[in-house]
Amino acid sequence: MGRRIREFARLPDGGNARPTRYNGGVNLAGKTAVVTGAAVRLGRAVALELAEHGADVAVHYGSHSDEAAAVVRTIQREYGRRAVAVQADLSDPVRAAAALFAAVNKEFGRADVLVNNAAIYEPGDFGAITEDHWDRHLGLNLKAPFFLAQRFAEQFDGDEGAIVNILCRRATRPTAEDLPYTAAKAGLAALTKGLALRLAPRIRVNGVAPGEMLPPTGRHTDPEEWDRQTAAHIPLRRVGGSVPVARAVRYLCEADFVTGETLHVTGGDHL
Image (cartoon, rainbow, N blue to C red; front, side):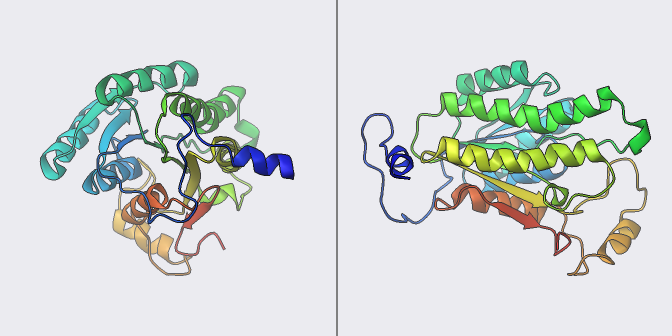
């Protein structure tokens, strides 16, 4: 126990003393945030939320180039912050992480916040799941966040960094369906705690676990009907949309005495 306490008490590089008490939270103004999968849906909302509160944003995208460009324009015009769209294929996690942070460091100098939002979700019956299906889910949903966190930590030279991993209510409440996706998100929940220990005290690592916030892409033609059907089994009897998730992410970016936590944003659906 004594050895562990001494490890966590070490000063950061340079010997600068850290505050020993709560210092009021992190101000995002002037910080740089990297948000993966930021062109659409939850990622877009997160990018705009962080920009509204003063952060410059690297808008990562895989294939939604037009949507990413639109997010960049919104950040620049409405919030007056710097923004750049960066393409990287996270199905090749190691190369993508290197390319993404090379672009970020060239444009901004460094990143202070990493939001691992990009994910893949492909429903599949248990007996029909293939090795390729399994590898895609584990690769993009679990392997990519690890190597992005690794690159983020390598380039970080400040005192107050933050990583927020977007999980899922299934990460802590597994179902019998879509097991590759569920296993990857459960692994990301464990990785969140492990990274929180490994990267303390300079980088805090937390997770946000949304419930059913938005209609699944391409599988519901009537959003209002989806809202009604979904709300019926949520304790708060309503769906959340993207805004509560974005606000939860911002809270964890600013909350400088919170690390290793998973914040459920489900309306009670994880209970």
